[in-house]
Length: 218
Figure 1 (cartoon, rainbow, N blue to C red):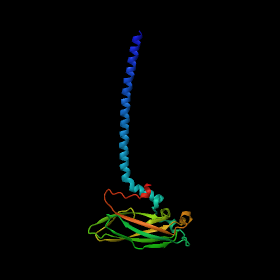
Figure 2 (cartoon, one colour; figure 1 turned 135 degrees about the horizontal axis):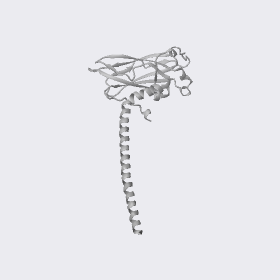
Figure 3 (cartoon, rainbow, N blue to C red; figure 1 turned 30 degrees about the vertical axis):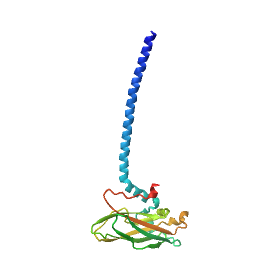
Figure 4 (cartoon, one colour; figure 1 turned 180 degrees about the vertical axis):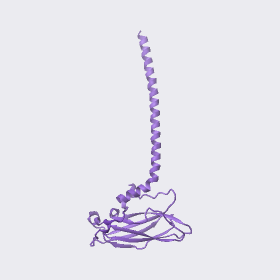
């Protein structure tokens, strides 16, 4: 009787082990399948975000003036009713660069202008295509010091928009802007009397992604 009981128990244990092995194998397959699905989804999302990086970065930066990127607004009554702060002149210097592959000649028409917070101002850049073929360019910009970007508002500019120049064509590109009067109330701006507005032009090509400044990656 005792021997039959032992044999029966051994069979039960063996069946339990077999069932556990089957369940474990099934669970392991489910885990592998879930992990694979997760990795595929992550890959698709990464590719999607890489294509959306430029417009998302542009929207974010223009909304929050992050990393020295300036705000861009539409002209409205608030702008026309601003009062200039006459005892706080600020010099705005203009800088122009081109990427190594860009064949345009690009420069500001004026090295600098002096403006008052709350006062609108107009500046111009000039771009020339000296080649014998049409070249399409696209530009990025920022403000130095970076902290001043949130107060530097552009009403009209040529940034983030493709510009095509025919062979040997020259164009003038306006920048209509103002410095927010709240500039003078920021303690960090107390000793900042000079701002640099810098543009960089790249040759626009299919599938191109504008580089994100290193300080955004940090």
